View 1 (tube, rainbow, N blue to C red):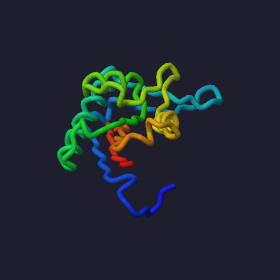
View 2 (cartoon, helix red, strand yellow):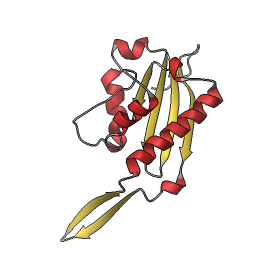
View 3 (cartoon, rainbow, N blue to C red):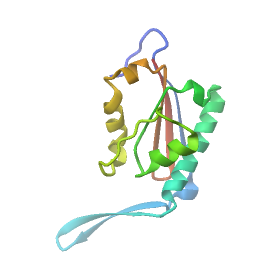
View 4 (cartoon, rainbow, N blue to C red):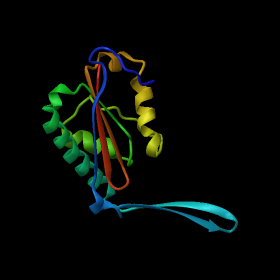
Length: 150
């Protein structure tokens, strides 16, 4: 539930960047075949590394605008997509336990953020984190960021 609360708790700022130069990295289609709809996804091999690169660029801009750095972020919750994003992003950003990873459960696509949030929402890990960075990455490539303050 979103509400207007007195104090400095909740979502504080947002940023969304689209990188149209990567628009063809991920394409989906729906076809009628033998009386059934078939949904297909074609993903270029560069899609994963392009997503990581775009996320890093967007976060850098976000941090510059808000005068933040990684030391101020206690927890990172991501969309879990594309598959393998968290592992590479975590390594390249130099993160340790700050990032939420859900492994071995297939590809969550747009529902990954909810699975990540559910994993920590009712735990001490979420409630003790002062600054939580939400990162979603998707087709386009589009990167959306938000900062949540406890």
